[in-house]
Length: 489
Image (tube, rainbow, N blue to C red):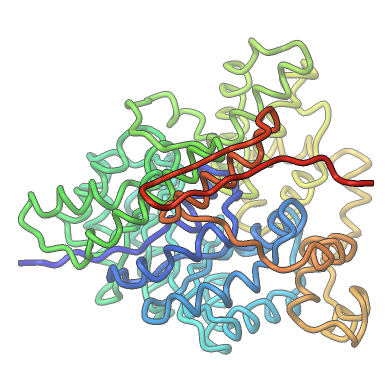
């Protein structure tokens, strides 16, 4: 009987998809040891975007998060993720990428799941090389997309090339939830045949309602490791629920290498946090066939609604989504992941808002057409659209721009000099020096009371109710009294 293993995405993709990266370190620590005991093959913990958001909005240091979680999770490999460029919308200097990898390894990350937005083999090769140099195992993401160019033959060729790089694993990743059970049945066998004996994973989302079904199809076709999240951070736009996939895998006759009993406390912990903080609780979704036509990530759709409403064009979301599909076709069907989904989406919105297609073009799209983001990307654009983008004066100005290539010494000088350690140096790169100073002034990571301490949480909540002057709590022989007094002058 075959065994199915699981990689946990709760602390990374789960809260990135549903809680807008608002999970705090103190929310993780009370249940980290339980997650370690469950038997996951790996636990995803960080993405490059966390460093900026945690520092700026929550005054938290992600390096400290990694170190504290590593003290609790000692057996299960902690995993990070990266894209070709860490900062998303700008070209990352090589010295910053290499230093970031070094510090990930030094702080406790053991694996790195690496994506290239165009599945470019040369970039995969560099990712494997640089991660191996600092002792990190690489999982290559083979990113799925739906278009005339993204055929099973295309994925066979890319899977074969990825396997030749000898990564620790290869992950068939469907971040846009575009797979259907029918396409899974043709795609997975093609990829598995091409990649040989490299261990494989399967990763999808639940945006269209089909993610769990695709996971089960992948299992039946020979994939023995599935990426899942723990409710309430599963379903909706997140990954499928661990409990749902494990239960159905067993019903199909497979054994599951996971101890679900210890994870019910994790589910209760995060559900309590979601209710107290007003965070989203993931729910199964109904099938949505329209999503495959535009392939816009859920967060971008909500942003479109917001921006169009501000302009008095709130009813125009359908027109924008239709224009997204048209722009994507003209640009040669880029995969709708960061940053290319933003390039396509912004251009489509501009076309609709201005009432004239390509009247204005973003700098990033000009760079994309000029080949700065990759030769394959530039070479796939329809000729007339490429000419329209590159014929404007701004394009001639940007054509002279070259990506920065500072040395480590120059990089350090730009961000504070020799008195700054490497972890802080990278935080300054992601978030800005002033934001790091403010974060450090905010003090140490604050404890977040867990659901396992309900009495403390109750007292804390009651103490905030200013309309009560006195509160008395009694249970058996134990009691506590709280009184509100005006401060003496």
